[in-house]
Every structure is written in structure tokens, then in C-alpha cells.
Image 1: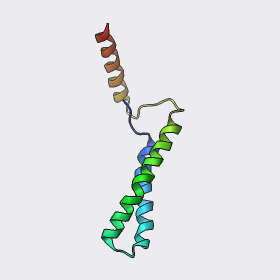
Image 2 (image 1 turned 45 degrees about the vertical axis):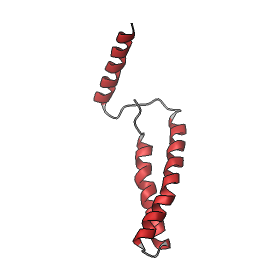
Image 3 (image 1 turned 45 degrees about the horizontal axis):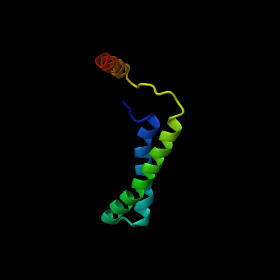
Image 4 (image 1 turned 90 degrees about the vertical axis):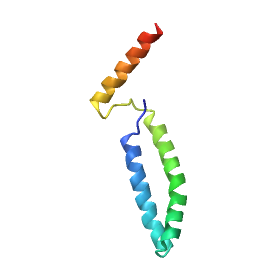
Length: 85
């Protein structure tokens, strides 16, 4: 079970807002061109950012944001272990 880190969760709005703000001035307020340009630019930026965040986060031990999720995951692992024996 893998969930996005807090950094990855923050990268989406940060990247989207900054690219949208920048591209609005470039397109002189043309809504259709602005949406196309923002989408065109934010897509690779998100992918590269998430890839780099993934590389950095592999160095750290994962931790659960919700204790209940950790218990459910450990219980599921124990159940799978029991099924294989």
C-alpha cells in the first residue's frame, strides 16, 4: 500500500497554481489558450516533480498519516501470511 507523501500532495496545487499564474500573463487573458498552455506545461512538471519526490522519499522510512490505516494494513499482511501457510 503506497500513498503520496505530503510533499507530493503539495506539489500538485503548488505547480498548478504557479504555472497557471505565469501562463495567464503570457496568453493575455485568452481563456482557451491559457487552459491549453497551462495543461501542456503542468503535465511534464508534475511528472518530473513526483518522480524526484519518489527518489528522495525512498531514503526515508514510510509512516502512516492515519493510525487506523496502519492497523488495517498490518492486519491484511498477517491474513495473507496466514493464507500462504
